[in-house]
View 1 (cartoon, rainbow, N blue to C red):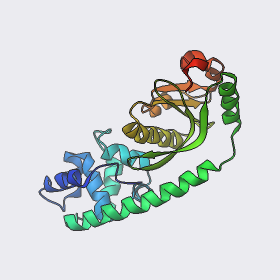
View 2 (cartoon, helix red, strand yellow):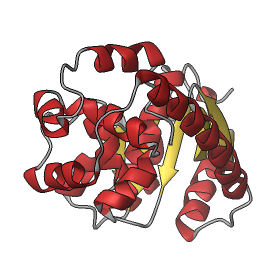
View 3 (cartoon, rainbow, N blue to C red):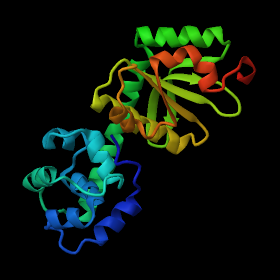
View 4 (spheres, one colour):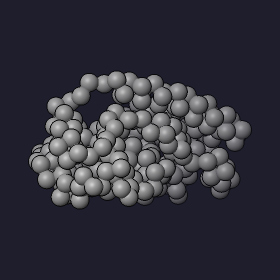
Length: 238
């Protein structure tokens, strides 16, 4: 994953604000977003650092983006144990460019695999509903975003704004957090798109909150009334 769409000028601002670049604990307690500097200083991608720390890359991403205002004590201790003092900004800049470049290549390969993936049972159900509504759509579509290609399950070609739907039978927390992160990346680029997630009826309210970056979260049983929920009509199609 790239460094959360944070530009080098912002990374430099974070770097210049730190007085003691050897005090990892202090810099994270004063501003958890400095975790981005720690990660880049170590030369890790989001997934690389999360693997070492025993947490999800979405958790790391949310800390770096300021969505989490504090780092748990146990995670902070693991970071301090594994991290080295910050290197020079030139070294951090070099790692930033390298990680961003490698991430873009990985995203392209991942998108290509997703384009060729077989349809799931839930996808087939949704596809049948859209065909009955005579709504034009594309499936397993790769979108270009400002931080790389992202593959989505369905793009509904509706007016005035497109609707992007992600549908999964999984209710694993990590899967939902990954979906939410994907939605955020898309909305940062396609600001007029409506992001919709469809999940099993067993989805709990606590898990639903993991999908806060989606505009609408539905359950499988809502597919039968999709036209009412999303205000879809055949006349909305392009």
